[in-house]
Length: 333
Ligand SMILES: [Zn+2]
Ligand SMILES: [Zn+2]
Image (cartoon, rainbow, N blue to C red; front, side):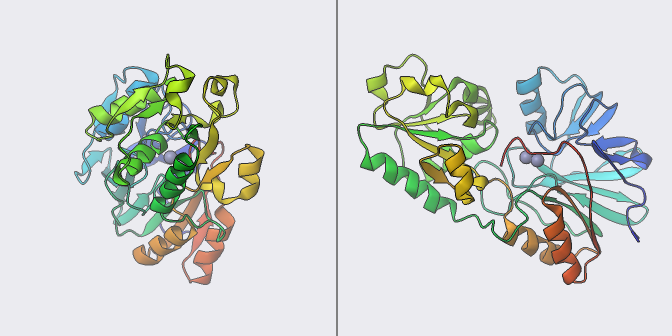
C-alpha cells in the first residue's frame, strides 16, 4: 500500500537508501552512514564515511575518539550522496541534532531522528520541512505524555534547594543534552551559583562550552569536602543516583530530569524524591501538532510507541505505518 519511498528500506538496524548507498543511524558499522545526532542509539562508532553536522562529529569524537571518515555538513546546505539529494535541518533535540531530508525520484522524505518543538537554549529550534513522507520518532507517543513548561520544573528544583539549606540537590541527567540544557535553564532562571558536575558529565559539558553554548560557572565536584556542597546543585548521570558515590554528598535531595518522570511509578522505582519532567523529545501534543502542520502524504513511525501515533494518523486520514527497527531504546529521554 505504500506509494512513496519505495527507494528506502527499513532494516532491523537502520534505514538503508539503495540509490544513495548509505545508511541512516545504523546500529552496526557501515561503509557510509548519515547520523542524525550524537546519542548512542543513533551514533555508533566504526563506520567508514560519517556524514553529520560538525557538532555531531565533535560529540562522536569526544565519545569514541577521532572520526577519520567524518564529513561535516551545515544545516540547510544540500549535498549529493550517490543519486540522492540530502539536506540536514535542525531538530531541536540536542546540540548538532538534525532531521535529514532525502530527495529522489521527485519525492521528499524527512527522517526526523529525535526531535522536540519546545525552545532549548542549547541548540537551534526544529525547522518544519515540507515532505511527502515524514518519518517520526514516537518515544512519548501516548496522550498521557504531556511535558509541562520547563520553567515550571526549574522552579521546582530551585524551590527544593532553597527550602533545605543543609542539604544539596542531586539531579540525575543524561550526559548528552539534558545536563547542559538543565544548566542553561537554571541560568535563564537567574541562578548564578556554581553548578557542580559528576565526572561523567564534564567532557560533553566542556564540549558544549567549546562549541559556544554559555553555561556560566560549572565545576567538577571531585575533591570538594562534603560541607562545601551544602545548598548546592549537583548533576550526575542517572545511573549514579543510587550508587555509593552519592554518600559523599550532604544528605542529597535526589532529583531526576526526564520525560519518564511523568509516570509516578517510574519516579518511585528509581527512588526519586523530586521528579522533574524535562524531556528532549516531543510529547504527544508536539508529535500530533507537527504531523498536522507538515500534512505529509504518509507518516512512518519508529523509535517508541508506534501504535497510538499510527492510529491517530489513520483517524486523520493520513496513511501511516510502523517501522519496526530493533534495539532502538533511547539512551536518553
Ligand atoms: Zn536522541
Ligand atoms: Zn533516539
